[in-house]
Length: 112
Length: 117
Image (cartoon, rainbow over all chains, first blue to last red; front, top):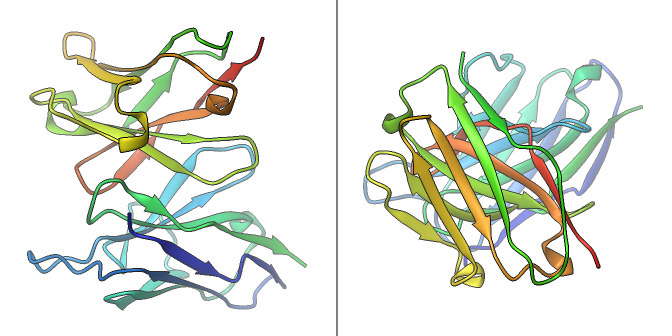
């Protein structure tokens, strides 16, 4: 199975400041079809995971443009340009190139 | 709007079975698959398997092979996940998610399954 490793595991951010989460995969997520199957989810407290970013850098419907994803191959980053109070929760990266999907351990983001 | 509504919480004894439902609305059910993901208390996310709502093809996580069955009922746009021979470490919130082979976009609200004697 592909191992997904996130850093840091927790982040305390002042509102309005940027935040960045790193995700590394144990093998390349670039498929022969040219797509890279890396996703970012946010699980707010007491809620289901919600899709933020698909295929590395595409924002899902309704996701604010302060969220951006980048990276290639095995190294990926999620950035929040200006953290807001509603952004608290646990962020997960996930690979979907192979079954089983595997998730990072999660990064807990809290507001200072 | 796309919605996935799951069945309510369950309490089961070790060795029993549980069947969780996931009723979809707001889209053409057979145009997407359904994945199931579970989350043990205070833990991360674990993929359990995927089913095509178009043709019923399935792919299960190896560790659950033989204990899990995923099905769909296209007449009611409902997906089901049955887990048998329950153990205490199956205690978790179970989520369904609409999607294709590679990811899930919309998720259900989750169903807590508690396995306890």
